[in-house]
Image 1 (cartoon, rainbow, N blue to C red):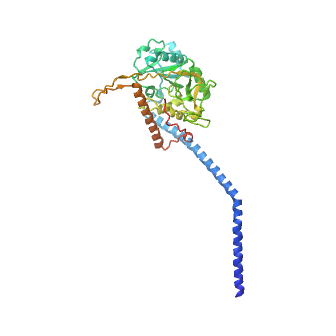
Image 2: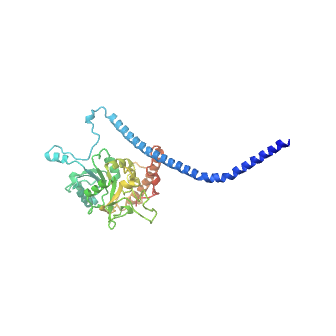
Image 3: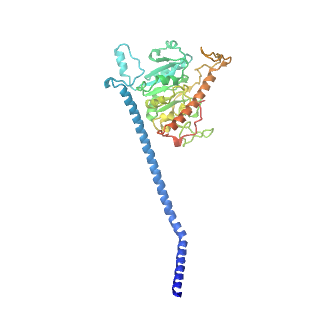
Length: 408
């Protein structure tokens, strides 16, 4: 019996010793396998990033296809509505060109010149007649079509200008240029124009040439622009609009002071990809997008400037710019609504409202309305981005914290 017991004990001791040696070797094994684990982890992360990037690329392509499909669907819907007409007679677009009542040699020659045209649309109050006259003369010399939005109703007072009968005149009392643009500059109506200038009337154009301006837009691939502002004579709201004498144009600013820090890594308004609402210029493609961005009931346009970059037909840091070599003076004249106090407000007929004994300051009321519209626009944007599950924000990872910025 003693023999087997010894053998058993020996086996147990041997087993313990074997186990002990294995435990001692574990730290060494872990040390040796750690680089392998890190290498595997790195490979997995690279693979994951590759797959994510590829997925984002495919998603973007899919969005583009969905957009084209949506446009095709809309086109097909329109086509279905005119199916009763022979295809060759369907005229899907229009323009703002005036046509003669009868044909003549001069009118036929003029029709042959109707190529590469652009459009100037500008609000026109009689108090700014001299300023508007100077602007229009510059543009007509460059083969522009001109449309005047008369917000004060005084159209006949413009008849003594030699170019008056060449312009399109539209009248609506106390309406803004965004109200006019939404109703009279539909993309299908202005599709024949390469560029749309939607300017205010209080701009000085002594140092501005439309032809040279467009040459820069085309050569630099810009879709949305504005002329730079003369800092010594202009009302400046945002630094990015200030003229840089050393450059032909600029796309961004660098700012280390104030609430917004602008540097090379900034990728959104107000540091880059942004123009102000007083003198924007849009390519045909950009305008089709911007027109849809304009809210029909929000007439002052506040908040839209922060979103115009989404209509730049690509990267807003490259497609949006301020042109310095062709600059203007922004006089900052508050014309719409007047500048002085008016009589006590009178309620409309058949209204239960009481007559107010307090005088009304139109400018204060307009600013209050503009601020309210800004808040409404921001809420609509946020709601739209949440509800549209198929929409992907192309600037989501690069958005600056500038949603609260307001136009001064």
